[in-house]
Structures are given as structure tokens and as C-alpha cells.
Image (tube, rainbow, N blue to C red; front, side, top):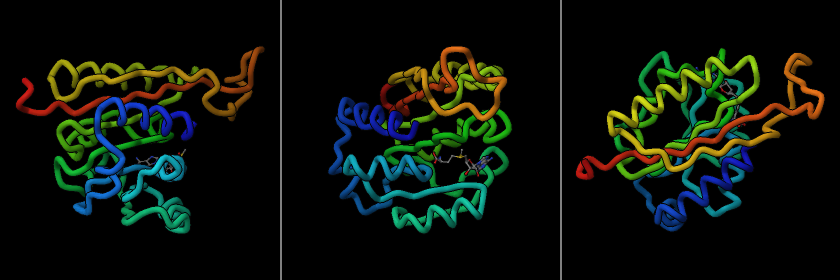
Length: 193
Ligand SMILES: C[S@@+](CC[C@H](N)C(=O)[O-])C[C@H]1O[C@@H](n2cnc3c(N)ncnc32)[C@H](O)[C@@H]1O
């Protein structure tokens, strides 16, 4: 799943004329903010200067050992403001954490706030039965923010075999994988409206 999302993200960055050089050579902290395995995949595509954030001290310890991050912060998404300046990052990426019982949908405006105008917000969620209500709320919020001209949709990609199901209730006859979705949006530059 991080591989699919990272690969799509790379395609969007290239299509959006935001070059690898810019992401990897700018020293002013304009780097992708994201989490763990995804960063490993992105590094293979030539991106670096990663900042990471998670609510769990244990997960941050694992991330630290990967030696990929310039900075790691602990914060509970949806419960407090993101500990970053506005308009700061070329890309903000949240993979595997937007789902029922994890990060609430209310975090989305914060993800947009810390992205620079013209930068990307890449998100994923699961499409398994127990997450369908959350997914509907997430997509409603995405549409609402688009109607407020805060961001524009770049792509939505359904992935049939997203990850292995963790419960028998989610397994169908055809596969023991559950589906998921990757969303990529671009923050609107104020002068565009
Ligand atoms: C399934 S893991 C995904 C980890 C990583 N993104 C990856 O792809 O390898 C979900 C992560 O979300 C974090 N998480 C869940 N709810 C959170 C919240 N409200 N604020 C911050 N982190 C949260 C968990 O601590 C966990 O590390």
C-alpha cells in the first residue's frame, strides 16, 4: 500500500511540475511531512528531507531507527493543531491512519493549512465494510473543502488489493485482501481565485 501511494504521488509531482530537485535540495524545511513506510518508498524515488509525525511514542521510536527523518514529532491528530507553520510543506502525506478509530476527519483543514499553496496533500483510507461510514464522511469533507476553493482534486485511485484483511468478516470469497483508496489534492494558490 505505501508502494502504490508513493508511486502515484511521484507521478503527480512530475505532472504538477514540482521537481524532485526542489523537494530534495531546498534547505528551508519544505519537505514532505509523512509517516514511515511511505517515506522509505519515496526515498527510493529520490525524495528526501522528511519530517514525520505520529501520536505514538513507540511508532516514533521505530521511525527514528529508520534514519530517514530530519525531525520527528509526537502529536494527536484531530485533537490539537499540527505543530508546524502554515504554508510550510511542498507535500503532506498521511498513509494508513485516516480510518475509523484512528485519525478523525476533522484533521483535514490542518493538513491543508501546513501545505504551501500549490503543494500536494496525499491521503489514503480503507474501503472495507467497517470503514465505509468513515470513508463517506472523509469524502464529504473533501468535497466541502473543494467547494470552498481551498484545494482541488488531482486524482482518486481505488486499489482493489489494499492490504490483508485482519478480520474474517472483511474477507470475500474472491480474496482475503480489503480494498482502499489513494487521494491526491493540490492546495489552491490564493491568486488563482
Ligand atoms: C497503520 S499505522 C500506519 C503507519 C505508517 N503510515 C505506515 O504506512 O507504515 C497507523 C498509525 O497512525 C497513528 N495514529 C492513529 N491515530 C492517530 C492520531 N489521532 N494522531 C496521530 N497518530 C495517530 C498510529 O499511532 C499508527 O502509527
